[in-house]
Image (tube, rainbow over all chains, first blue to last red; front, side, top):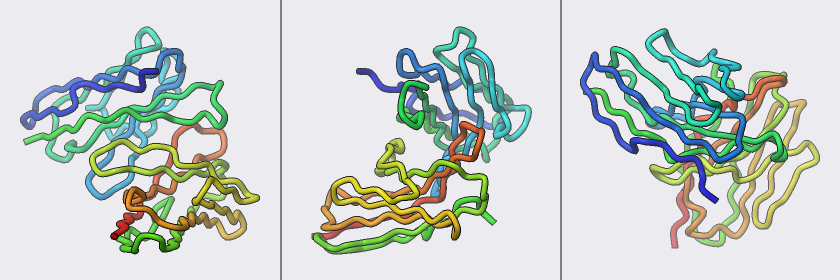
Length: 115
Length: 110
């Protein structure tokens, strides 16, 4: 079946602009996660949704970052007043509590470049 | 100190070789352990979970030592297609977020 999809695959923006990154999880997965991966590093947790609510947003670096999942399916990560340090690959993952160990399945990511 | 530490490599090995990667974690509240594989410019994919008793999946063997807070991955009979970055991952008790190491890069040459 279809995996996690993310759009756009690449986004180039200028410092100070606003961006939205979209994640479409695997159908029926109730849990959705956002991670950020900088060059040469492993992914870093940003936020986790269970259904429509953010169950853990402890990884969001500051209040310029915000994420929503209004209907418990698609999620949007929003970044205001982008900075060059925000440049990274933003990965989305989803999981089902019916999977052993709640395996997280990752999407292909959105590569964000802030000029 | 990083929560999950790995040697970044690269490990350059010939086809057919056996190679081992190690990883240490700092938080004793870690409860679940995984190895993920990530190909260049691709997303991470679960390779295998790691259990205290040790577990094997074909050419891959994973071990966990809770007392030493140490995880290992052994790859036997390396294939060219094993070339990738291997990410050591832990999950803390009562949380759902994954904590990743920086990854160890493996390059298998003919």
